[in-house]
Image (cartoon, rainbow, N blue to C red; front, side, top):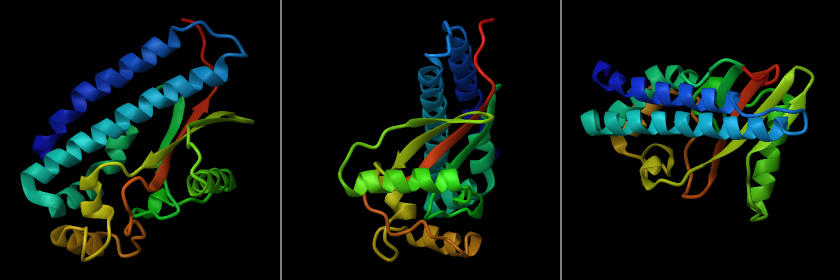
Length: 201
């Protein structure tokens, strides 16, 4: 697994650059939500690419069962690489979570995921969202299941899910709820918590 960690360096630098670039944009109070949306989209896109690159590497190295073990050990740390200054929290949340840490709990998170679920059910566009709170801003972005390979770990048991992966999932995640998905389903959502406001350097 250590052989895959070389993937971490370049994406981390890209994230740092994205953050630096966004912090050097002109600011005023009316543009703040758009600025948080731009930064949130950039950070979550890079984090998602980082996760997928490492998981694909794990699949190539040892198959889908090995990828599940890799995800169990490294997914949290890979995600947190995107927790740059002013971002005090970054999470992947779902009503049908695999890792208990990714379960919905806060009322605002539950309401936002219900909104995304309703939009998807009514065939409406699901977009990222910036919410203003007493402590700053929260950015949400839906996670859609768009890659067929994702079904090898999140599809239908005994049909889509790889047998070796299912065995490891059962061992590592006894309360797993992240199965039975189809392509283009709403898998979950990103949540980025910002504290404070952007300032010019």
